[in-house]
Length: 176
Image (cartoon, rainbow, N blue to C red; front, side, top):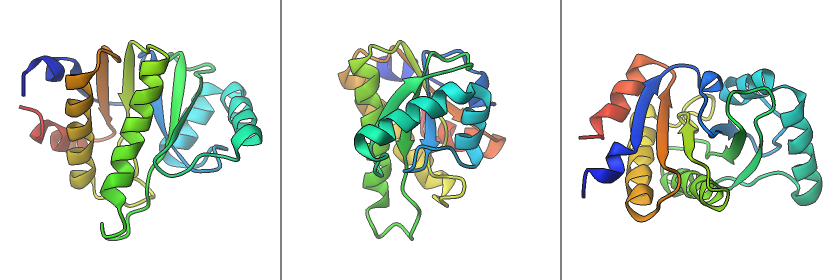
């Protein structure tokens, strides 16, 4: 695979709510009403506008299914948009978790493409309370980034945001 798609990938350690990318991805729950971890941090930092838009989405479609994604504004965040995706709970890897996690990335990419989002930042989807092992999640994330960027122009840049040094190193292991 050429280096060109990987040149559009950046790995950073930090707080996703502080990034000024066009969009950040929220590791949401299916209710879209906020929760703990990344989800709670995004809702707190972004303010009530994000929750109001999520409530409108719920009224239209009843929430968001595992592997799917929806988009809202960024409220008070530096990012203009939030893509909310619902990752799988880890059940040992035998209940389609890798495919469901990959679907989170593909659904998010599709919204980025439809909205021509210049840059999108992803957290470690499902690696918190949902218990997805960080190493396996990093492998899925980098694989999906490579495949998407090799075939699509949008987004122009992808940022994988690691909450801690361990996660950053796991992402870096999969990027030449």
